[in-house]
Amino acid sequence: LDPAISSLPTFAKFLDDAPTCDKLERDDVSFTLALPLSDNQLGMMKHHCELWGTSASISVAVWTSQGEAAIMQKLKQMGCDVSAMNVQILSSQHQSAVEFPINKLRNMALRSVTTSHALLLDVDFWESVDLFDTLNLPSIRKALSLDAKIGVVIPAFETQDLHCGADSNCLFKKRDMIPKDFEDLVISLGANRTLPYDAQNFAHQGSTNYRKWMRQNHGDLIDIPCVSSNRYQPYVVVRLCNE
Image (cartoon, rainbow, N blue to C red; front, side, top):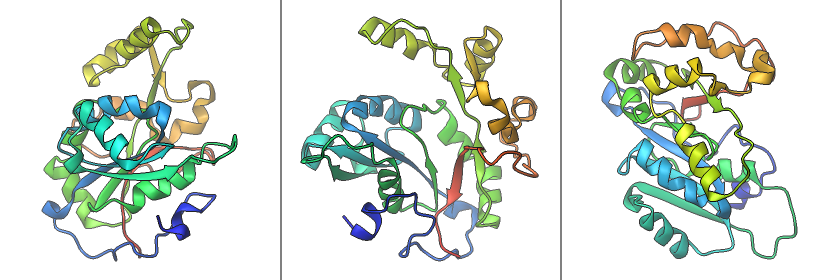
């Protein structure tokens, strides 16, 4: 591990060894899913591998007391294609009860990305089944190739709390509530089972403009003219380069 990155207490805005922002052609644009996670979240990787695509690029940074070989074996057992993955380990051994080092793990996951663009997600946010294919549409790849500073916001949603506890039956119910695609999402929103992310503080996420997004054509991009809240926390596909 590079101590200049792994020891950072905050999210790194610049990586010294990131490539320069050279001009891209449309076909140069490619994507990696970057995920920070802990041992007890590792089981969610089964769903990420299925949803993002088993052979699509994934970079994970795991806070764990296990070795890399053990983590890789578990990922294989979940059906993940480890040849398409970059796995970084941050040891939790000999650690007292400290706060989950989320920003260290985010930095590590991004540091290992080798594609032109990355989507950094929290592991408990699951992709729609067609997100990877949508990002790879020619219109979106072309737009991202034209400007290194363009980012694509991925609208985020949350399911209603079932208040049924943490037993396995409840977890299966929660999993089954998560919409798989846009059609599922529309039905779930109509039934009030799903809400825009952070619905209780909707003004924080209002810049995403969910209403416009619901009406736009598949593969279209719409501008976000300004950010309306300092607490806006979007999930964004960005180019990984220094300019």
